[in-house]
Length: 57
Length: 513
Image 1: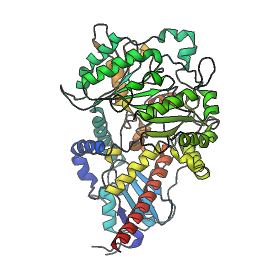
Image 2 (image 1 turned 30 degrees about the horizontal axis):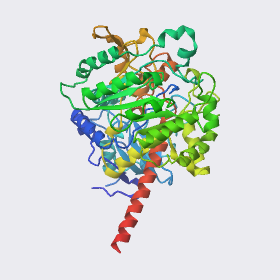
Image 3 (image 1 turned 135 degrees about the horizontal axis):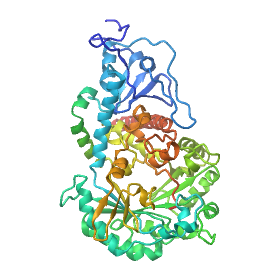
Image 4 (image 1 turned 120 degrees about the vertical axis):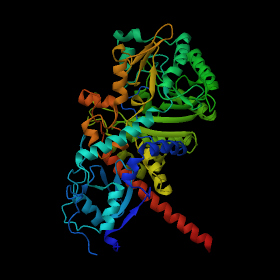
């Protein structure tokens, strides 16, 4: 086991057990589950989608 | 054990390298650390600057502007000592480092985008009803203005009939089956009223019909994109049990708004809209006020924010105001009068400092920032906030016009040559397979620029209509400075998160005393 010095610290902010290889193996299942999560957090609008053309409305 | 001097090889074959989809976010209050974000795994990690430098050194694809005039952060030229094996292993697990070749990683990216696109496409459809292409206003910048002012388009100005409304609802089960819905599916469907102006006074009977039939068919969420001028004719249909959400445009305080959003006789619409907005809010309707902003009217936003305060709209839970940039002709965001989205964001932030009341007006990125903060707070996966396609035109949206023609996008309507289907008089739904497939297949893997872009699963490739304006095909990117906006948004979300954590800790300490 190596020592981790301050100059190489890594602080994971989310999905602490994330392993991209494992994630890819069970991607369909994970994505299906995240759809449910999305409903739960839907009270915060994710409004990166703004229709592009000038609206007259 | 000492730090590894040379990146280890996998089976002696391929070199360790930075993922093509690693995003480097400079933090706002420190240069000692960098926030790494992975563009398809959804990982967020704050790392020491030397670690970020090391990853950058292995990044053979420096960020570059894809569209617009913004400059991205370049790769570090400073020598970077490798971190420990343990740190390298962590960076691999999170996705930032990989042994995959570019081609192999592209295939992995495609698998992620396909999974997310399929998830979005399996959602219950959104139905857009366009009762008419007609409108009672004549706004100079409107993308449909020619329909009302050019006699060549007079034939479009008809109104939806009750019989057509019935045919549309009768067609819904077949459309919903295409999205995996079965008989009795209780997932709510969305019905959006759009136009032209959907809530013209004369359209009241047909709108009443649409709302009644929607309720008969099952759980339905109704909303409308309206100019708000004739809302007084619809008050009894508004509210949580009816048309629950309205998007209404105000382009400034009275003087500015009335110079842009005018009736055919040139008179203004501000006072009428405001009175109707008062009534809609009182009925519990969610009202989203949109301001179409360019360099000629942004200075009026503080005055408009004062209107929101004076009318007691600001702070109401069912009131939300946001700005959208007016786009230049042919989608040129560098046109002298217009902002790109990052410029608009920056200009609004400056107004916040000078005129705090203006904080009542948001920008689109504020929602994303709040969501990323929530990801930090709950330490959850970021996959739910990522997307492979920009909007419903590429997943589950059907737009019905007064002729019974079906379109994928409400900004590409009124031309039978581009419709994705139509309803026959006997109710038969005909779909144009190749056009439908084209719209539904646009995602960030379907053009090479987005497929190589580290930001693309946060932006979805941008608006197809704007991309078509720029490239001549919708299978291209429309970036609108998104990369810079995303990095700034993430940096703000992190600062807010840290502030909240510190406040929570202080509160806990006080409680313990």
